[in-house]
Image 1 (cartoon, rainbow, N blue to C red):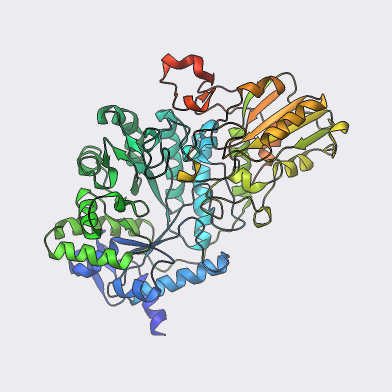
Image 2: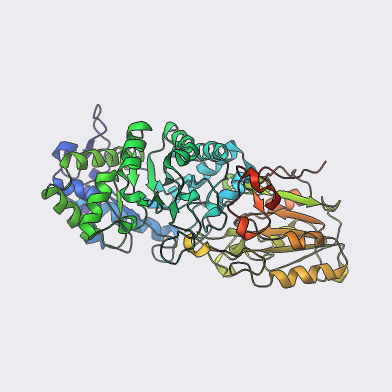
Length: 587
């Protein structure tokens, strides 16, 4: 009974007239100034759910918990999530501060850690759709499906401005055009916020403009260095982040990358002088996963450098207790001022208030996974993200045309969904996924899907990339037979042209592939990007139930060596296969 009372007390509504930094606890209503230094330090630590026991979360008064990619309680069911959230509420209520944890997840294209959630196209496809109202609906639908499991904070959207498509995170960005990134990022943030979820704009700053070959460790480009002058970089990125700030985004995550050789996690000039003083960001600055480890020195030195540079919430998944001790020692030793601690904690409490964590105990979620609204929105997003690159009078298809669907990406929802789907790197294990594959979509659209190419009027060839995420997607070979391309791409492409039938090729990938030498073999070409679970959006446009409206959000170079070309590379037009904004329509 005492536990139940503590949980309820921890979630009581702030007394009428209280300011943002007055917070309820299990024993009393405390203002920020009433919190002990230890309680404040606890609020600045974020741990992974498997990285610290519940008893230590309670003892240290940890302020935030997250799930890494693919990290779920039990079997990942809704009941397992709800049980875990109850346990965290109890642990928080039993802490000396009584403050609830804020729980964060990477719901980067839907609530992608949870079976039966709606998986939307990855951001690069949404950039092709370029529809702000659609992004707002996707934000809302994602927020509603997050509420089903009790999560509060989404580590999204990525507002990276894409330059070099060899980067493994290319598909996480909307476009190489900052104007597209700005407007779509704002709409998605508003969709999350209107449904009560904290949005996190990431990764501040310059992550999409790192130089190839400067990647951290063995990475080719991920976590690399932005070598261009800071003024030039800010001219590209300032409008993007300023738009997010002006829209009221509550959190910004720091980039793993460096700018002019200085790691962003310790860059006081950019995190404080620019982000705080010049851009007037008042929300929480959060580090990325163990991001402070890129700084020099021992753990305490890294903590000091990061916090003094401007980071408020330290994402330290597996050494939360050591980080707590390091931060506390640094304050006691005068290396970090308590004023700086108060500043950070005030922002964290304000964010928790906006997430509804300081309100009365919420009722059970009224939402469900895979609602009609979410599925319809995802299907619309898939249709609008399809880019028609070539059409020799083959499309639209007629429902009575006999179609043979082939290729390694034709019948695998994991491939369609890409990275950040059930697991960090995604999965191609079909039985663990749901929704409709491209082949399924054809079978639901037409009664004339045949099992033999000899019986077909049209061949549909579906090729693409394996799922990947972050540095594991870095590549210097984006050919159809490159290390990240699907096994069987080339073989299927060669086989398709031997049948003597028109070939419609769909590419399921997170970036452009090298295809110039194959174009003459294909009568039509569609870039499908990474559509997610609702492949009926693809057949919607192929059969002209919806028009082709998608336009390339990035430049498509001829060869991988030219993947750093953007619309600003006017001196390299001869290396471009399709320019930014290209996309055919069907009359």
